[in-house]
Image (cartoon, rainbow, N blue to C red; front, side, top):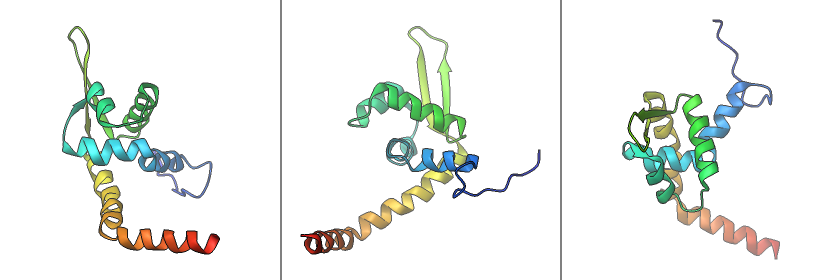
Length: 123
């Protein structure tokens, strides 16, 4: 298979969808905040992420699984038991996104000051 040229600025490039999945609100929370800690079941993820619907969580997990970020393991028991964890690729992606979280956390005062300054100018 020939390697494709990756251009996330091109709306037709498949890498754009991966970028959107990795950087979406739910995708980030799933990878960074939860699955970096270890394997979780669907119900555990749902309880841990306030505000996410069951449908949105399922869609996000499917997209991340398709992209090779999340591993889904179905255990043959009744009722079905499904575990989700990060793949090696998902772990690397989580580290990259976590760097952004750390920037926000470490420099929050500056972000907040900039927002307040902007809001004041817009009054």
